Length: 346
Image 1 (tube, helix red, strand yellow):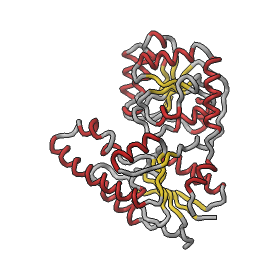
Image 2: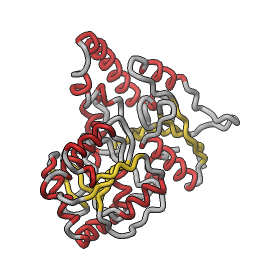
Image 3: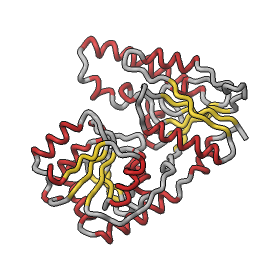
């Protein structure tokens, strides 16, 4: 039995997919006979990132509170990989994307002075990330999208290791009369693309449940009203784990068209619920797992293509069920014990 610290970062009172992964990994490690726990380090706002890196660097994970030596560390989200330990495996969710793949869109909203200041921070963060990640005993990426970013910007080689679905009581109650979108409501998740697809002639009459909260919700509600589809879109807000499992069990399919998603847990959660996933070619992690016409659809990132795929499944419960069976087969091959065997090096 080994004592293993799982280290990730999070802003105060904030949940995220990396924390779901951390807790699922903790459970899997314990079930494998190890002693494990989650250590949360800071994730500070812009302008205060250096203090978060320093605080993580100074965090002592050499022993537990009762003095037991920690045999290994597994880090996840930035800047948790700044933690120091002789046996340190990084299973990377993502670096600070605003300084990497999101730089152009993010920096376009800054003043000239702001861009100059952030360019300096970007250079420092990139050099720091490269140094820290190269110090790790081993680096895994949670998708090929993440692996590619590491190779491009940090010259770090990583092995892809996809997280399995979180351990929940997934089931399939059939193939209902609605599609489901479940994620935070921010521009990167592109819920607006789903709303626009519902306004296309091909998706006439299709109902959709949008689950999740975020700053985009008022704009999405206004867009649904403007396009005349408000009566077919249900904004369900935040769903508990049980409510999400229930929605996945009852929907016809899941629609998840983010841009450049690191991984996207809802994809494998849908698969575990025997539901096909409709995503886009530029969606990152989801597009790596969805095989077009096999366990879902991969479309162009535009409303008409999304609407056509939605119509295909809404027009045939049998087709949705067939793709759902293939999706479930993918989920069944993803197992937490396999993840533990790959990540544990002690």
